[in-house]
Length: 325
Ligand code: C5P
Image (cartoon, rainbow, N blue to C red; front, side, top):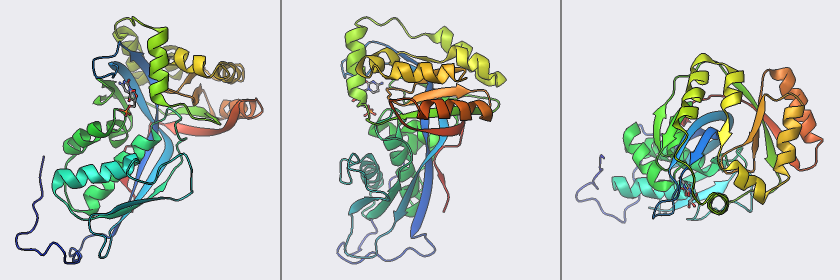
């Protein structure tokens, strides 16, 4: 990893001079994800579960704006949500703040940054919204601070922040191994349409993994063959074959914590979805639909059914973290 060094002889108390030609504001977008396939093994000594998963980035986009600070605030990292949300911490517990701090430490930067986050991915929804914020922040601060880390270095930092952080850097569709952080991009054809059913209350990921351990004390080895069928379907752009291959080992655990999600899945499938599954650790349900007409029918059926807070129609795959301003 490249390490920037402090300028020799510089007075550490002096206000930071603006870097000639450098941006003072960088805006980055990063996508939420769904898991098309998720096979979970028995936890290791660190408590993490080995995974075989297929991630797909969907057009539900987090935006992080990183602003340089003028004076006095040297080394301070602040975060503000564009729309206040009591469920999202704005202090050092926020994954975006941790991302900026990790990048600063890894590169020897002592500048601060003001982060403004616009959230669109449901909080604690099994779609890695917080991880997308972290990925966007790494990308934004890397540009703002001129630290110039390449994709591999950013991926390594991302993996230290959380299992789901590397994927929103990469985007599109990828197989994940290990904790889900060792990624291999997948060639895919076509666009897929999803209707996402949002729940009124989030589900904490660790609780879902704990319930998985209770329900499945001896999980079988990862379903590598089923994953092969899925990657073949994606290569052909065959939505029906993709639907047949959708699989989530955490679904049973999520349904046992939120039984009403079974009705959400059934409602979506009755209304014309090719298949509907819990996304990652849930509680968001992702319904794959054949066309925009079906998307409208499925969304209407879900919105008039009890346990759904709302729906979002998205297409996929979309790009990973990228600068937009
Ligand atoms: O890595 P991250 O902080 O996103 O993971 C959140 C939690 O999800 C972990 O603390 C762990 O309980 C669970 N997890 C797991 N196995 C994985 C990924 C996450 O048990 N492969």
